[in-house]
Each structure stands twice: as structure tokens, then as C-alpha cells.
Image 1 (tube, rainbow, N blue to C red):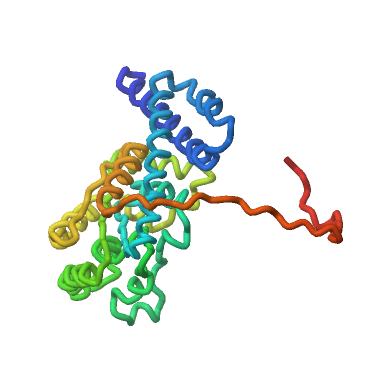
Image 2 (cartoon, helix red, strand yellow):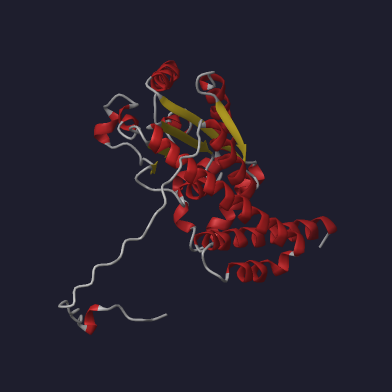
Length: 309
């Protein structure tokens, strides 16, 4: 085996290990209140070395700090009745879902919700193209994160031939005016494109193929998108050229490094929504009412789920 082959194999192993750690991190992030977190981080990071361990601990520290700022932003959005729309676009496996998960992780789902629309049905195909997206726009005091958006027409629909040339051109004539109209109505519109390299997407697809927990993320459309990398590149370039307007510019997130992409995107999002801090009144837990004549009735044992753990 040549030196280059050995180096390539070592790099592949490193990236596989990093991907596995990232999957583990997702669980750690959900269990931040667990007292064992620091022990688990150190244990799982041992093969990657002290530097990687420090990097991951820095990531957690910054993520939790930024999520705290997102909570303050949420309070401000509610207080000021702001209407916020954030679009997340990018190639398959670019990390859109990962950053959306971290943004919403500690927020109130009644305030911040995700719109991830499936392919249009027969009835929706006869509607005005933007109609099914309009129903998901926010009211005052709400944030909506679009996991893919009306830009499907400029991307997958164009590349896969799901729209005609006339429909494609009409989209580009309409979308700048549509977005200007949203902004005039008081909506804060932010558009992100997650950019990954050819090599990185290839790697992430391989990980999904070999990870039973992630195989559901792969579809025949994903496989075809991988084959048509260059077609998607051309479609993206046209989209950027024709829809990057002063009122609603595109923001590019370099996403080959998932953790940096998440932190950078959240940090930037916080800077795009004017906000302040809301003073909260002190919360005092009321005394529970005790009724001396109340007797709690026992529940039948068969109603309880088995205590397997």
C-alpha cells in the first residue's frame, strides 16, 4: 500500500471517528443537565487526543452560550411582536437540519417552529406557487425556520425537471417582489445557503449509507442529486445571481465543519434580528394546597410500563 493510500485511509478513519463523535454529541447536547456530561466528553474523546477534546468542550461552551442568547431573542420577539422568517437552503447533507435542531433545541415551539414542507400534492400544484408557503408565515411574536423553502423551484425542481422553463422564469420574476412584499409587511427575512465541498458531501453520504440510524435520511432523490453535483452548482449560481437583492440578501455558511457552521450561523442570526433583554419578574413558587380529607388512590400495576432500565 502506497504512502498516499495510507494517508487517505488514515484521513478517512479520522473523519469516520469525527462523524461518530458528532452523533454522540447530539445526545450529549440533549443531556446537558446530566452530571455525567464532562465524564462522557472526556471518555468519548480519548482516541482523538487532548486538542480535539478541548475543541469539543469549547464547542459545547459556545453552543450553550449562544442558545442562551437565542432564549433572550425569543423573549424579545414575543415582547415586540416581531415576525421572523429564516430560510435554510443548501445541498443534501449540508447540515441544515443540524443547525435548525440547535436553534430550536431550547426554545418554545409555540414561538419558534420549523416548516419542512413535503413535495406538493396534486391540488397544490395547481395553486399559485408561493401559496402553500404563505400559510406557514409567522404572526406577531413568532419565528419560522424553513427547512428548504420556495427556492425548491430554483434548485431541485429545475435540476430534476419538475417545472417547465416558463415556470422557472416566472419564479425569478416573482420571487424578488414576493420577498420585498414580505419585508414591507414587517417580516424580518433572513436567507442562508449552507455550502459544502464535493468531497465532504461524498463523505457524509457514505456515513449515512453505513449508519443504520441515518439511512432514513437517504432517498432516491438524494442519490440522484449526488450524481448531478454540477447541475446543482449551476442552478445555485443562477439562483444567487438572480435573487441576491439588497432587501433580502443571501448569506453563505461554510459548512464543511459542522460544529463551526452551527456556531457561526447562530452567531450571525443573533446579529440579524434587532433585540434587547426583557426584565423578568421574580418567580415565586406558590404553596401547594393540602386537603386533609384527600386520599390518593392506587393505580393498577398493569397500567405501568416495564421498568427495563
